[in-house]
Length: 179
Image (cartoon, rainbow, N blue to C red; front, side, top):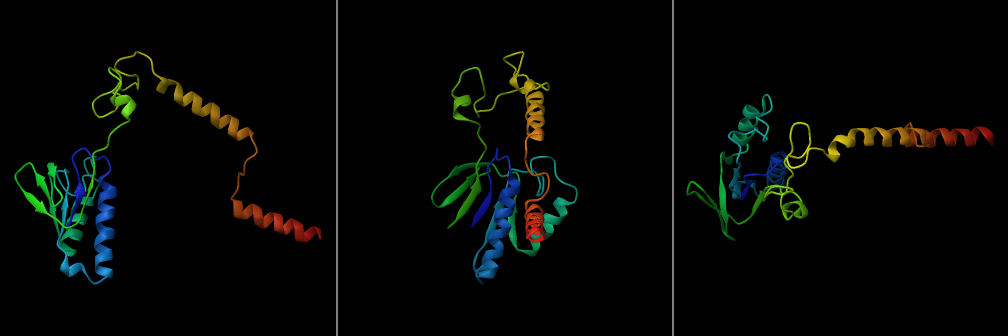
């Protein structure tokens, strides 16, 4: 069994979660000793999560992988998937009966298919100021003020400012005290 993330996957944490839940379910069913688990990741080290790592994550994950006997391959560059194996750019072939690979994230087709708007992955490149590189102004500049306007209108409207369960208890209490 091979579980992991492809290069460009933006949320490797979800793939880690799948791996550990899968391993737990194999143990729970008494099948873990019959299954070799392999984790592949484009991360340079376990616990990188695409953000340079989280303090203490690398040694903790290494300990979990050792304890649970999960083979791991970092810097994995997945280049080809066939019905029976995953192929990495370094020539490694990983045969499998079952595999789950977190795919690369892609933006919207409409952006990808609109020349001059976005890049090949469907994202709109922006400057630090959130304006697009193509246009000098941006709707994103207006979003904070639009959000504040929406919040101010919601605040004036009638919506529960306390928990629903508490409100129900108070209503029941009022009804019993009246009658």
